Amino acid sequence: MKKNNRRNFIKNVTLLSAAGIGIPQMVFSENTLKNKTMKAELNRPKVLFFDVNETLLDLTIMKKSVGDALGGRSDLLSLWFTTMLQYSLVTTVGRKYEAFGVIGAAALQMVAANNGINISEEEAKEAILPPLRSIPPHPEVKESLKKLKDAGYTLVSFTNSSNIGVETQFKNAGLIDYFDQRLSIEDIGKFKPHTDAYDWAARKMGIQANECMLVAAHGWDIAGAIWAGWRGAFISRPGAQLYPLAPKPEIHESDLALVTKKLIELK
Image 1 (spheres, rainbow, N blue to C red):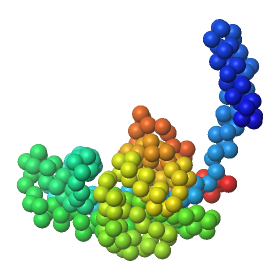
Image 2 (cartoon, rainbow, N blue to C red):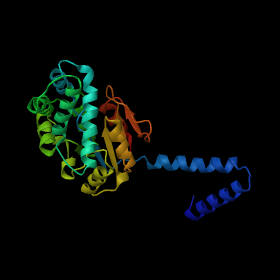
Image 3 (cartoon, rainbow, N blue to C red):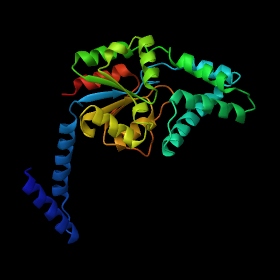
Image 4 (tube, one colour):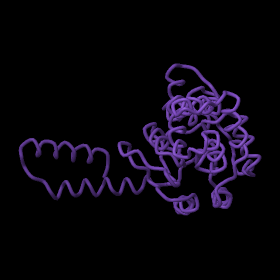
């Protein structure tokens, strides 16, 4: 439908609706047009951005270390992570910056104190930072990244971890060569899911928001990306859920291999 015809269509629909005249066939035609447009828009994103921790890297070892520091209280692990995320956003809103691992150690001390467990700052850092920097990738990650590169995708890691942190992680996990670029919010000083972080990452790659797709295993990260105008691919790792009040991403699978299959099918 040409632009002028589309304008006339919308104008006529509005006038007829105001007059109380039913137009089921015309509404159906417009809905059909929208569906065709949506299908046409599902082409390949210019850049695939990957969250790192949990999305690519398996945090099991680090979670055990944190659980041990909390006296074996594995039931406190999710509380610790949400506290870490909460205070990363508190830091951002307060226009401050601390490395994500440092905030994680502080959050660990807070959760411990609330449950009658005494952990020093040094003990908290020791429970998080060494294991965090040497965690392995999920089993399907390397093969999936190779397939995406072979299919011509530009791959960029985009993380709340520090620059040196993610570089160390990727070297230890054997992922360093799969990525065209590594981006850390350390360079902007605002944690995801702040919209400015996604805007900054798109500018760094020289592309528009709708040319970006985030691959992540966190509902809050996918929500932030979509609200910033990005596309999304959600990996529902165990315990991960989408935020019900945010728009749903176009891809939703249980692991990166299945996400990769759908991405390669895009033209």
